[in-house]
Amino acid sequence: KASRFSFHPAACRNAIMRFLILFLLFFPCTVFAAQFEKFVLSDDPSVPAIIQLKGEIESGDAEDFERLIEGQSKVTLVLDSPGGLVREALRIGATIRLRDFATMVAADGECYSACGLVWLASERRYMAESSQIGFHAAYRHVGDYLEESGEANAEIGSYLTHLGLRVEAIRFFT
Image (tube, rainbow, N blue to C red; front, side, top):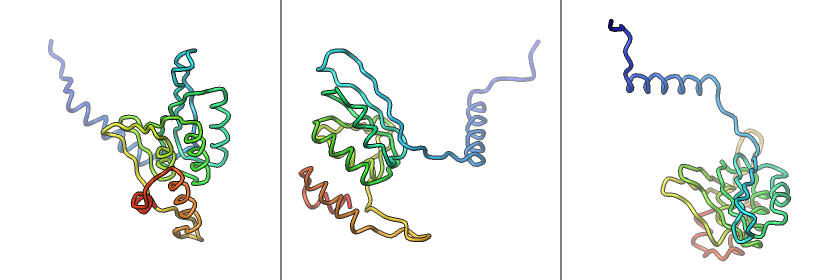
C-alpha cells in the first residue's frame, strides 16, 4: 500500500534551509571571546602542536596564548576570528614572529581585522582557496560613532614594518 507521504531530497533541503534562516532571524548569534584549543599530535618535538584560536580577540587572550604555548617549540596557530582588540592581536603576533610559529586560516575559515594582523605575523602563512582574510584601518568608539584611530594605525604600521612588509602593503592593511 502506497503512503501519501513521500521523501523528496530537494524539498527536505529547502525546508531545512528555511528553518535555519528563521532560526537565525529570531535567535541571532553572538560573538564570544576567543577560545583556544590545543592539539598535540605527537611527543616528537619536530611535529608542531596545533592551536586553534576561534572567536573575538579580547583582553587577556595574548596572555592565554602565551600560557598555552609554554614548552612548545613548534606551533601552527589556526585562526577563525572576526577580529577584536588590536593590542592583544599585536602581542599574539609578536609572539608568533619571535617564536617562528606558523599561522593558518583553514578552508572556509574567516580571519578579519585584528585576526589578519595575527595571520601576517608568521613567515609561514597558510590559507585555502576558500579562506577569507580581511583588513581595514583601526577604529575606536567615540560616543555612538566609530572614528579612525591614528594612534592604533600608527602601532599597526610599526608592527607591519617590523614584520618586514613594504610600505605599499602597509598602506593597504591600514
